[in-house]
Image (cartoon, rainbow, N blue to C red; front, side, top):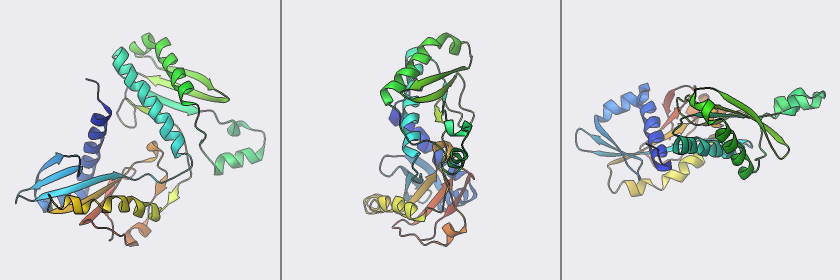
Length: 266
């Protein structure tokens, strides 16, 4: 069965909440509320039913720190995921795609290029989407029999003046266990992007009044994807010392790098 975008989004949200519930804080909260059911909803994202009959709203949001390479990674990931879905729909084939971009700075004879490569990593210039998609479709079409036999396919393609190495593999991604696309990009890590995190909370604060009409309490879970998703940020004790402006009962933050969660001060 081919999943729609909404099905994929719903599945991902369920997986994210399940990861949170496996942490010590998630388990403790689950037990303290005496939750007996977790229902996927639209607004809020989840409604938790407790043993004493309470309805608890759990809103879920992803936090990705802004960086100049983010749009590049997201754009290419979107194109690659479309090809993965086309492979499933047109050829009944599940596969994973890895996209690498050639960086001539790495092999330059000039030291300034090596310094730029080290202190300004990754790529931000988005290639022509139609051309890139067509190139990927051609690789898939021309190698469908190899992929069906379980063989890895790797080819270099050129889109205008840029070169990309495309890997198509008929196995699930080793990092996610999914048949999806990964863009091998990089970026400078942001340490404690507190202001951006507050902006993320602000976007959800106004929903508490709506949810309170049908739910007894409202909680927020902030899911922080790892670097695989072009999220280059990290937090230390400054995160726990900062007081956030929030209208939620509590704010939980789950970090997919550490596989752990915390409660934000508010």
